[in-house]
Image (cartoon, rainbow, N blue to C red; front, top):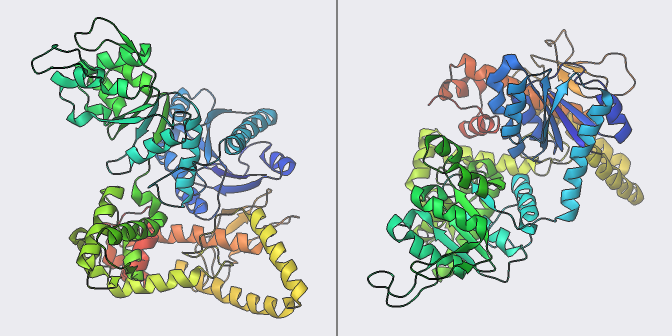
Amino acid sequence: MAVLLTVGFSKTPLAGLSELAKKYRHEILAARNPEEAGAALGIYACDLILFMLESGKREEWPQMMPLERLPGAPDIIAVVQGDDTAAAEYAIQSGCWDALYLPAEPEILESYVQRCLEGRRSAVEQHPAVLKRDEIIGSSPLLGRLLQQLSVFAASDSSVLLMGETGTGKELFAKAIHDNSPRANKPMVVVDCTNLPASLAESLLFGHARGSFTGAVESSDGLFKQADGGTIFLDEIGELDITVQKSLLRVIQEKRFRPLSAKKEISCDFRIIAATNQDLESMVQQGAFRQDLYHRINTQTVVLPPLRDRAEDVPMLMRHYVELFCLSQNAPQKEIAPEVLEALKIYNWPGNIRELVNVANAAVLRSLGDPRIYLQHLTEDIRLFLARSHITTQSLLKLSRESRENSYAPLDAGRQGSGLQASPAALSDMEAHSRSEIEQAGQLPEIEENLEAAETEISREAATEVTGLDGYATEAFEFLEDGKAEITAGAGPDNPVYDFPSREQLPSYKEARAEYVLKMETHYLDELMKRSQGDFNTARKISGLSRARLYELLKRNRIQPDR
């Protein structure tokens, strides 16, 4: 079974979807737009997204792909109407698994969905996650999905292009590919293309014979020859001079080259891994990068996420580098204050992991006489960011306390800090197992009574916190034939929050509540920022939330206030 998420569909998303779900025991979640889908993926680890690309809503198309960077990193099938070639082209360029044209027969839908899921399952079974990862630190679902992808690429011998912002660790990921490949026992040669002058590039890359130029007192192997049998990593290949690109293309194609002034060509067995922080496709259109070289190195592409999209990995990374720098300074190991970790998760990290390493180093140096790292030991950039965002030490301490409390409340899937990633079915299995153990201990009645009381209080508190309306939502759910929820009409004291049409199957209470809280959170924050005209301080006063809490909620829902 799998968890499927439909985005942008009507009440009956696709003909035959309910039958398909029953046949294969799939779970179906429904979202009206990318924002609701992002909220759902914050709780459920989905396997596949069916995303409707409507011609009249092209402004939503760019919001589709960020969904795959969220927990579960699902595959995406774009669904397009008739012969909408523009939508199909966008889907292919965006990296969707495929485009499904409507109307689609139930058999076609089943074929698409099952082939995608089978391929996903097969990749996991045949290529376990990368084992040798050195300095690649983290346990987020996004990083796990990325390592899974790298393990697949490592098993092949084709070229790989790593794309991502500066400081995202492209060289570390290139090394992970090499170390988990059949070439692991051969050298990996790193070439920094930003420091490769055009006049010396061919000599440095391909070598030269003795006397080929002034100062060439002896023959020299080039970097490609040094990588024979192994991997050559071309870092920031977008910086390579256009004249050198032509020579490089032939070498990659033929695996042969002639050192400068040499009489014979040399054969060389190497694998290319290239990296860039630039848009090579745009450079090709501008004539700054050769199209044929771009296609040659772009056999397999990996997009490395910025650190701000891996916020849950930040504490682990910080602890790791603090430990390393303490060792290098011969200093006792240091604790990191809880408010510091909360601040680091909120910070947007424009310099990515490279910046975090510098922050950890500075914090260790500034706290040499202190057993703990506090906010005062962080760099000025982070402290100014907190000050400009009106985030105080007190609010960070409160946020840290809430996070710790929520980590012990697995029943409350809808609240910040629950970290729920399992599908509803998986949760049911876990709960059944736990119930069996409790029954054997003879403690079930008392525990159930306590849990029921606690769960009721959590639900009331979560609803009040998200809606600000004492448990009543401004929108309600209508449950579809597949048993999942969708927002429909208004609700209040005289109108029930949930509308249950006559039907046989209902979702679990926890599943319904989690979806309700998440959807109401997104709706409330959107309305809050509209009424406050994007002003953070006004929004804080209206909501009654602390600065840190409001900022975290806005960040989680990808809403950017005006400062």
